[in-house]
View 1 (spheres, rainbow, N blue to C red):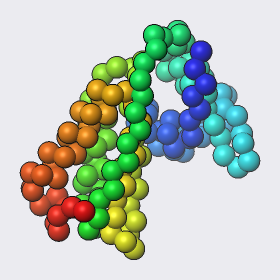
View 2 (view 1 turned 180 degrees about the vertical axis):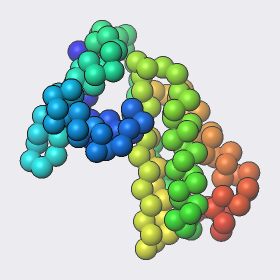
View 3 (view 1 turned 135 degrees about the horizontal axis):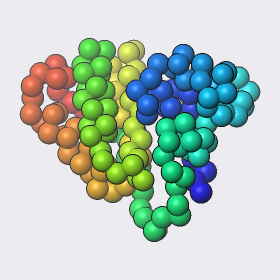
View 4 (view 1 turned 90 degrees about the vertical axis):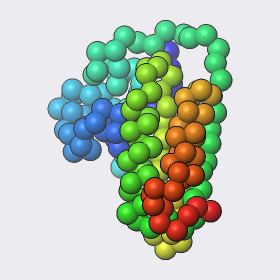
Length: 147
């Protein structure tokens, strides 16, 4: 059994739903959640129950890697394009037992984008190669280059 806990926003991203829809599922009892302070947390088992996935069985030992990519000189439009590309790359990952978790943050004031990745070695490496190829390929994605 897994102890993974998700925020409402993470569940919405995973399921391709609006945050309000997920909150509605919680209020109606369709999705079980634990309230911690002013926020809900959803256990992996409860998310699996909602989606109809069988409960996770103890899997073979594996490795997980976390990566932080920081890009300087990124305006809002470029950050939005890169975030969309990265999330599309995550959605093409096909191992449901080892999900790839990604969060992107854009600091408007510093013109800096940060991409945080947590997942198995191969999927993380594939996503990093995708980001690198886009940044090295030019394509005008970042406008001013990368830092």
